[in-house]
Image 1 (cartoon, rainbow, N blue to C red):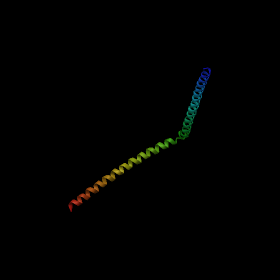
Image 2: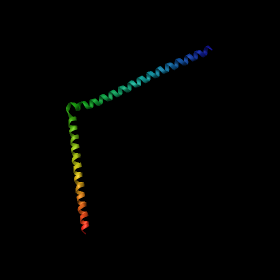
Image 3: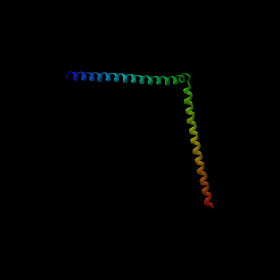
Image 4: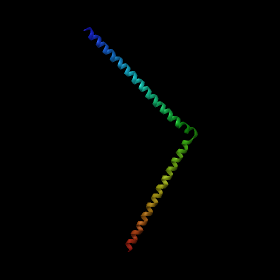
Length: 99
């Protein structure tokens, strides 16, 4: 009976120590992942920081507004072309009715 208690105590001890080691490993892994994310954020911030200092983001926003203006002009051109096509169709229909 004494041997049974020793093996149970040994099994329980190894189970507890395994759980502690597993928890420690998980904590280290989580810590390393958090460091990687923080490092990635720092790198992204460093990439953006020089643009803030030299004002190049202002040029990017200006180019975006230029693109918006170009797309508005394009839409106006398309509308004019559609109106012209409609006029030509009407004229062709009128010519067809006269014959």
